[in-house]
Length: 115
Length: 110
Image (cartoon, rainbow over all chains, first blue to last red; front, side, top):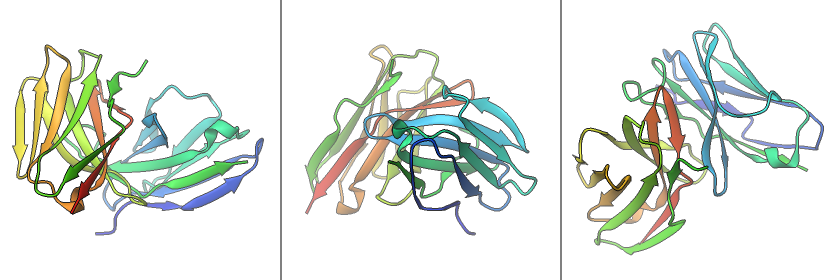
């Protein structure tokens, strides 16, 4: 079974631009969560989508948004990029709502650099 | 305010010896604690978890200990192998939320 895939793997943008990242979950998984990883901060939760509905959101500004499609694929958008948005963005999928009952499987991440 | 702390950014251990990775937390609401391992250029993978009502959980070479009174947990790897070299994240879980620590980089030296 194919794992979680994320595209693109690397991205360079400049301040003020916007970016869209894509995540394809494992087949049959209905939940997709997004995390931001920065050095010293670990993984910080952005949001989770389940069956096309955002069910949970972390403490990030409204510039960060996402959506999920009927095939469970998800996209994350960041508008008006800032230097501090440079990070590794990880997506994770699970069969059901992410929790201890449903293991999260992570993709390799998209490395975003904002210049 | 970091709810989950991993105060050692890095740790080096000789192959065959025990690796002990530590994690402290401030939120008493966590129901479970989980450990993830991350290799470079890959996403984190789930390693082991422990319920907040337990004090120990073991899976092969990996054992997690929880001390609720001290709000401290640790992951023991015995014996350590070079393939264990990775970044280890501790996470707390409550209310359908995961809170991750900043990670500890483990290097197992041959």
